[in-house]
Length: 159
View: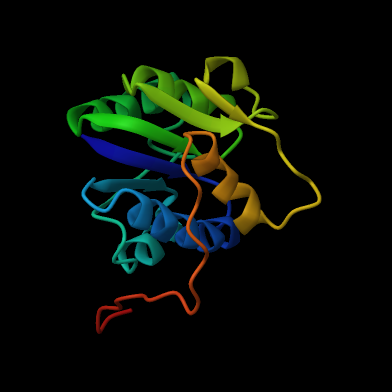
């Protein structure tokens, strides 16, 4: 079984979610982690040793609309994703999680598709994004390990 993290917002949001990927890795050390992101964020995700696989979701071009949602869900289903963390609060992300067949779909109560999620977390506006993301692990009944800085990245010579 695998764990998916979906973050298809801007590059800065993806950068912050890299720390969450490390927390997920430390919480579930034996589970493969699949990270779904926009094309511009893929090199960052690929540099994170906590992530086994990066799937590009080009939601503005080739993956836009329902066709893209179904394609992403199919890719996650192929990887036997059991848990999906929806960092992005769009209906698109919630639908991908639902159609992936994942047993657990964890996201924020403020998500457009929150009703699709199995675990909803209060979106604490008074907390930093890194702390908010960590609350998603709490929703699964596990305490998020502390964030470790600096973030270790494995860069290729081209990067």
